[in-house]
Amino acid sequence: MKILKSLLICLPAILLGLLFTFFGKNVNDELALYAKGSATLFLVALFFLIIHTGKTYYYRRIFFVTVAVSLPIGFITHLLATRGSMAINLAQIIECKAPFCHLVIPMLVIPWAFAKTIIFPGSLDPYSFANIPQMIILWLCATLAMGRGWCGWVCFYGGWDELFSSLAKSPKIPSIPEKWRYLPYAVLTTVVLVSAATLSPTYCEWLCPFKTVTEFVAVVSWVGVLKTAIFLSLFFGLVIIFPLLTKKRTQCSFLCPFGVVQSASNSLNVTSIRIDTDVCVKCGLCKKVCPLFAINEESLAEGKTLINCAKCGACVDACPKNAIRYYIAGTGKGSNPEVSRILAIYPPFIFALAIGGGIIGNGLYVILKFISTGSVL
Image 1: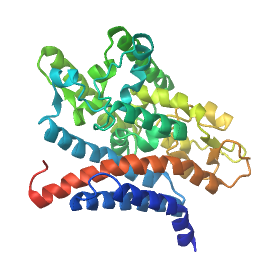
Image 2: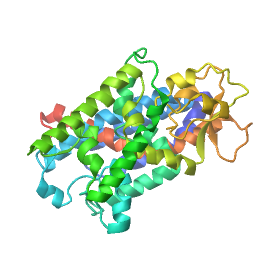
Image 3: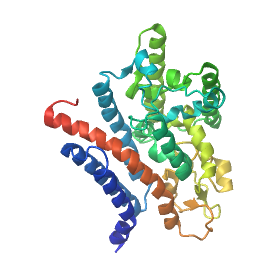
Image 4: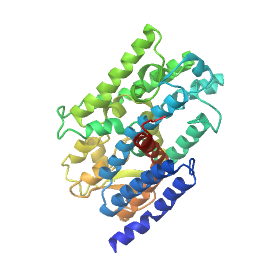
């Protein structure tokens, strides 16, 4: 009966998965259809396990990491097929042929408001790959649905530092001064102001560590060499080394300006994490497992997480007293915690299915194509 109940709860997600699989692009390509179907089956199976076992974080992490690893496989192959290189040159930038990235969104507002200028060389054509209108609409809908849950469920980069933060059994650096939590606010302020002054996407041009696994401007000068060195240093430092040493998502916690914007959007969302102070025994396990430093002594005393909570469920699953739960605004303290959890994770999963399913499917398609033909192009 419990299995049947879990399947019924998952039924809307199963139907949506079938819709994404059989009514999207490339439905006449048998290999693409098999890849998309396998990706959907994989995600629905993980969602079933989240619902059935009552554990959120572990199975969500499997999905999150799989998306991050799959993205370069499909994305880099797309770049090689369409332009022959991961690098983008000046002519392609002028022609607005760069796929739009959500990390640039915080830098768009001031130039658009005052100069009516979009400072990222992405396409406005709604039929082009990863175009600006498509990505902004997707971001707005996801933000209203989950707030910074984007960083725990949808972001196709976040799984990289989550992967490396999960590999070590225990942290070699057990604690980090809390003041470092404010560093991404400084990064956001700096890149927004500099972007407005120079009418250029400063973070993308100088600081984004994920240029290492996606797309980068062609290195044709010493400035390009310097930028590439910064990208590689930040990727290996904040995405690989420090997560291994701290068991925390250090890139997301200390660098990403987009995460700050999503943190602010948490106040617009009906879902949050609450702590029952009457049941909590102050063991500190939730602080230890939180990947984004979203719990401290003050938040524990107030019975809630900090504003930068990504709603990943690590603290909920780890609490030995079941004192931490997902909370839906407007419901009482005595509401069913499992119902609240399902209502809280359904919107993020739908977005994860829509976005992550495509990314995993594309990556799997490239792998299957290589196995069957010996080529990825």
